[in-house]
Image 1 (cartoon, rainbow, N blue to C red):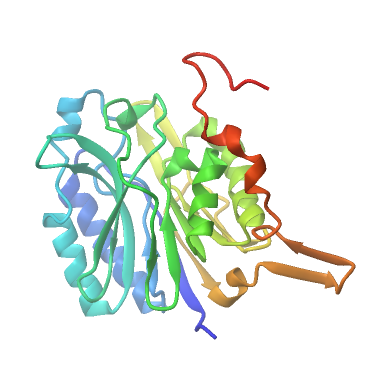
Image 2 (spheres, rainbow, N blue to C red; image 1 turned 90 degrees about the vertical axis):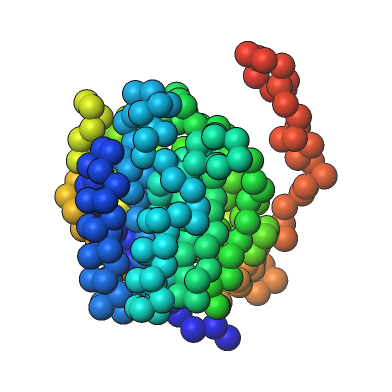
Length: 288
């Protein structure tokens, strides 16, 4: 039996290109959430840097490696506070000069992991970043198994499914939802939790950058698709929720023994899913 985890999602505004200022706000919010008992504190996509860059050269000015100066500062805080954190940034790969839309996972014992966004829309920073080049991974935080996606990844059910099959109890989605993403906020997040029998935390930013208004409305969802915590605003806010890993791991839901039982993992038919791995011809949909 595992111990339940209290997690926090920090919905906040950040200033484009102001890494130092954004970092200081994040460190303050990390301390505030830790004081309320949170063991994992999640920040939005690109919380460190902002998102609405107009060129790769502009984004490169704000990019840094992982590990780097910002991860070092937050790692020290995690060690002092005994907490984990996940936050978004523009990552620079030193060997190639490529930049990625990334989320870093930092732990209290110096752990540093990074996820690079795999699915890239034609929007903001993602017009200039390299698609993620690492496989999906699940990280054990000491009783809570966490996988990371970023924003647009949520629109591809395969992403959360792979993390589920790798053993995730919780999928964390740092995001920058603008006004056009309201349907994702309203429907997709809860569907990803329900169809995989996992917890799902989508943490959005607020504020405005270069004409893009970010809508907030972060949410943390139970394994059965029900909201545990949800923002109803586009203002700074911290959401809190209790996560029970054991509940996420009990995939078979028995309503009536022998008559009404559901297991959304074991009831899969992978042998029928071959078209999912077939890349369609350029510009054409998958054949029916």
